[in-house]
Image (cartoon, rainbow, N blue to C red; front, side):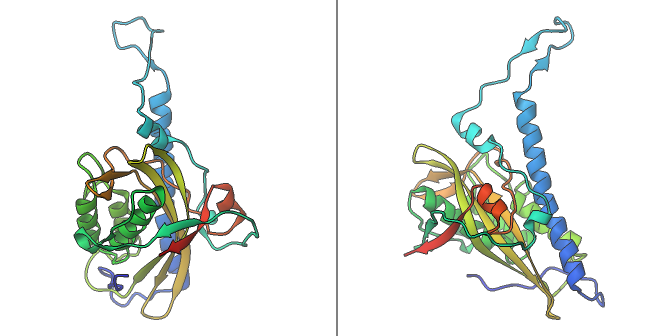
Length: 271
């Protein structure tokens, strides 16, 4: 795993407290949940009937354009969640099959681990590697380099990708947009799910991380942060696929009753 890097900035003399860390992380999760709400709004808007334009009969209905199979998988709604759901909660004892995530076999662009097989679990493993490398350094530049090397044409860009926006939001919320700071981020994948597939070459995997933010003064806070992405098998590796990002995954504390209800399963590393 790439070493932790200092965050890009903090106002000098402003102490970090556990309460401040909690506010910052809840704010970042709220942004993720906001992306979920926006995605649902887009889906509902695309599926709703629209009125005719000026000059047409006022009650004429224009049918929406048919969605492709991959778009239907990406746009399918997921369980809703609140910022409170992302906080540590009581663990449930529940039976359930684990998802076995294969190990990486090498390193690709932007120092992202690669070499995952052409399976749904391989796509999940690649997404985990992309997210960790993009966000753990807490650098907008690094996040942009990662998505630049791992997205198909027509997919998320250096400006639009939710991973870049999440890093920017965390930096902004913490009051540390530039300079040198002592905040670090660790993303540990805990649970995941395969939202859907289309053939062997398209998968929408979702991962539920435990994000731990720590300061140089010893303060720490943990929160769940989840991500779903379109993934396409392209020339021997999984890439973030063309098209708009899927409806955002619910960020739910791993192992709680709500996490199981959302379809998450524990992740187990495979050789």
